[in-house]
Image (cartoon, rainbow, N blue to C red; front, top):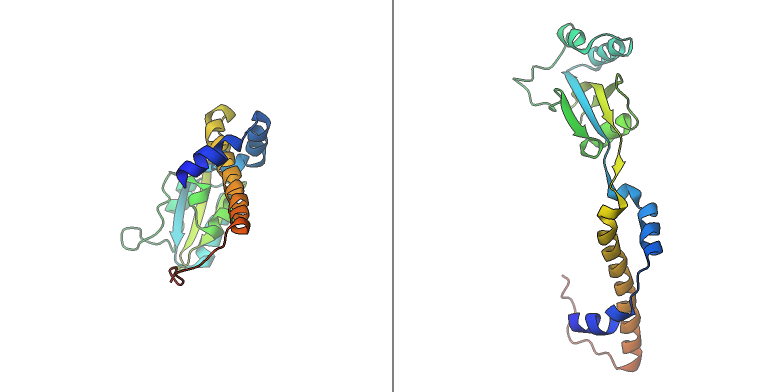
Length: 178
C-alpha cells in the first residue's frame, strides 16, 4: 500500500508556496507559543477571605503585604494546593476556569479561582507574555507535510472509490473493531 501511495498518488500531489502560506495564516494559533504569565498566589479555605485579598490587591496593595496580612490561608505545608509561587505558567496548562479568567490578564491583575477541591486561590499576575507565532520559515516544512497528508488522504479515498466500482468487494471478517 505504501508503494502504491508513493508511486501512484505521491506524484499527483503538488503543493504551492501560496497554499502553505495560506495554511499558516489560517492556523497561526497552531504554530504559536501559548500565552505565559509569571504569577504568585495564595490559597484560602473560605471564599470571603479570598475575595478580601483580591480586593486589596486590586486597590494596589503589595502582594507580599497581602500574603502576610490575610487570614484564612491554607497552610501549604499541611495541605496540597496548586503551586503558584513566583511561577511562570502557560495559559494552556491552567485549569479551564482559571484559563478563562486569565485570558488577557495584564501585570498587576488579581484573579480569583475556586478549584474542584473547594480551595480559593488569589493569583497575582506579575508579568504577561503574549502568545507568539513561530516564524514561517521554521514551520514551513511541517505545514507542507500536513497539506501533503491531507491531499494524499483525499486521493486515497478517491482511488478506493474507483477500485470499489471496478472490482467486486467481498467482506470475509466482521467485528474486528470490538
